[in-house]
Image 1 (cartoon, helix red, strand yellow):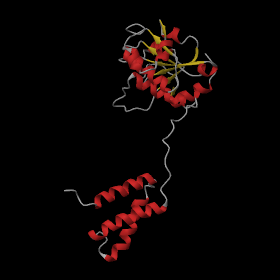
Image 2 (cartoon, one colour):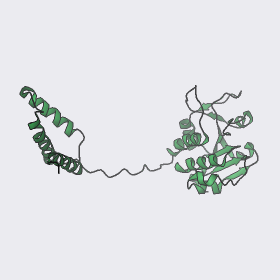
Image 3 (tube, one colour):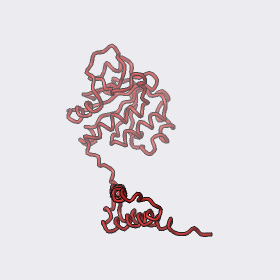
Image 4 (cartoon, one colour):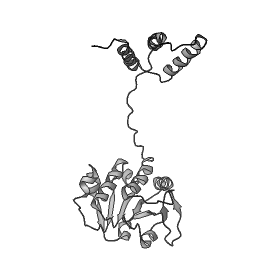
Length: 242
């Protein structure tokens, strides 16, 4: 494992219950460049045939996943351990957000791990006691229930900000149409509106034209869009076929 990989946090799923949730967590991890998953006493054993389909191609994470008999074993080589929980567990520890934790992890020496508890109950007090800090997010106090993959993706996303992941390329945008083409569109529409009495009364005609021009110039249509709109107007002008 290269140095870049060892600087990324290990995702530790403690006593996960469903293979589907393990797969979804793996998918969330790989979306944001995390590949090292550790499992502590998965309820249905490991490997789990339900994990693969739920991972949607994140097989590298599942294939590398290691199983441990206890949470302590799973984080034995980690210098920095964060426990995700929204509940007070009778332990006094620093509380950080995913953003704060990711910054600490990026700057830390030694391996880091983030603990996630079982789907139903979350981490036990003994698990939280192993951590240096509690990791939590501001959440609706009336409904603080995140599923496992959601919790993983919140942390993985924040960690990805320190890894230089490339923003997906935006679709190439065409430049705005030349003024000549836009003027042609406006003139075309005005020629259709004039006989319908749209610009009456005469005293308001100039202001109405300016407003119409403002509406049509605001979107910065490209030449294909202007051509499409001209086609729409031409279609409306034609007499209906009998």
